[in-house]
Image (tube, rainbow, N blue to C red; front, side, top):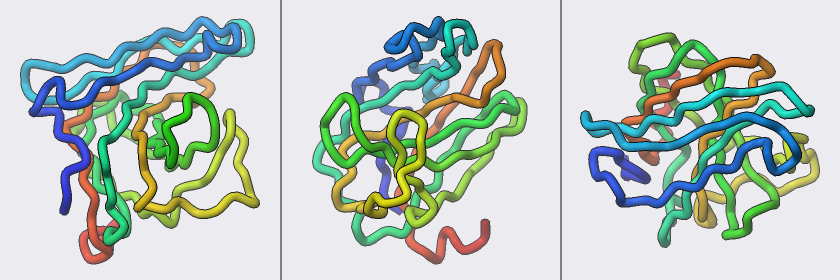
Length: 171
């Protein structure tokens, strides 16, 4: 496996917040490093003003994972559903490739996501005519919550690693 991001090395990646405030919503979030070598993506999803999402993302420096079939991520959540998102450009807005994953409240999970299962989307809508995710072109990585449930959320992330097909076989 190849490390994409390991939160045991604080500050190695700079994270930005993009919440539904961009369209008038009131959700809040933040991304911080914990003392035990993980990252905490926390906040509150509000459904006010047609809102309902919170996200964080980071630019990745010269990442070519074209020889890999997907990713494995180690997370501890709150029982809510999240998305891992990749972007193949440096733009603020545009096509994102997303894969959803469920968490178990308080339990560390290692989740396997195949690149072939990522869906192209734009502002929440699936794009059926978009090219598939090209792992050689990934420029941004992010996490998003948009599960249509108002309330606090907490996702702890230890790492994200690129994995070969054999490592993804037992899902």
